[in-house]
Amino acid sequence: MHVNTCWPTVVDMTSPSGTRRSDGTRAAILAAARQRFSEDGYERATIRAIAADADIDPSMVMRYYGNKEKLFAAAAEFNLELTGLEDGRPLDEMGARLASHVIRLWDGDETLMALLRAAVTNDPVAETARRIFATQLGPVLRSVCPNEEEAAKRAGLISSQVLGLVLTRYILKFPPVVALTKEEVVHWLGPTLQRYLTG
Amino acid sequence: MHVNTCWPTVVDMTSPSGTRRSDGTRAAILAAARQRFSEDGYERATIRAIAADADIDPSMVMRYYGNKEKLFAAAAEFNLELTGLEDGRPLDEMGARLASHVIRLWDGDETLMALLRAAVTNDPVAETARRIFATQLGPVLRSVCPNEEEAAKRAGLISSQVLGLVLTRYILKFPPVVALTKEEVVHWLGPTLQRYLTG
DNA sequence: ATTGTTGGCCAACGACTGTTGACAACAGTA
DNA sequence: TACTGTTGTCAACAGTCGTTGGCCAACAAT
Image: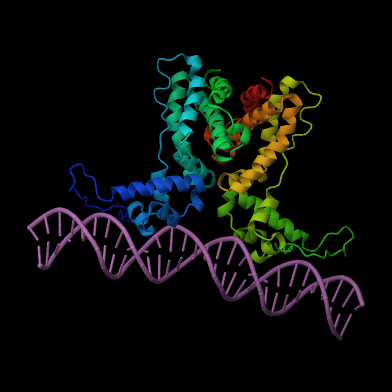
């Protein structure tokens, strides 16, 4: 289609580790983008606003990330950090561990909020969300459930409860859900997730 | 602030029941708005597109509904139809009844999807969602739980699982969740909701 | 036939969007 | 010094948005 216009083809190798003078700007853009996307969603987060937050010109955003879609893709790549959650620990406490992990992971991380906000109104982004949950939650389920199809179903059920909590707590901000302490979340969601895992 | 410019102050009472010639247009706008808002979300659903769907001029939308916000408010008012769900039936089957009710209610109704899509990126709309769930789910919970504060907490938990299912099934379209039959949803979510209700 | 009201279309406004290209400031290299 | 490629600024483009006001046809009541 067209050549890569997002990135200078020849990399400046003056610095020993391949860093560049513009790396700071790149990082500032990405940080501002994450915040804006998570607060405003994809459509209302404008390139101009992101550039203003990063204190640079809007055209720099285009130069370094090509277009708005690619900028979002760069800002919304993230990790559920689920690996190692299952090894060597009692299987019947996994639901509680998972609930605890979700709270710890989501609190203070805006990347996932940006992804969720955008996925709701943007189908390509929804595809990204499907992929992330399928590839990162899938292996965990297959380790406790041999049947491939059933594992997928259980992963879907877990996603529904986890994302439902995230939605009502961090995005819609239902007061009783916001008020839940981490211990309460573990107490209530733990058994639910446990049943979806092994019940 | 300013007078009501959304509606002619003097109503044409020529027709016996107070209907007007423009009622058809009004309804067409509302139907098109519901569909567009549910499919595209608040920002991307443009007045022009809604008007085109309804086969009328964009300015008519403004005349009848004032502005985009008011149009959405008119399109997103809806009913969870929860009254009568608890009377005279065994309390320990209420979770299953609720799960069954959710599926029946959401399947084919785009109003609630419009509300949810818009609420995620629009704070005033999120407030509407909070209000609807608080006022319609609250009474049900108070009928099974005397403690006011605990009832609110349980309502929040139920919302998290219900909205999580709606999100993953109807909006993000996670394949395993979409594939669930109504019976499977009742089988899996029923006990969860039952525990949030009375556990 | 006359008015006044309602329903509807049309063209345009001002604001804002993503995006582009020209150009200046600066770095390192020869 | 002059040259080259990177970083950044500025102004503008083409398009879309919500919204407004003017205009005309259909209709109602006088």
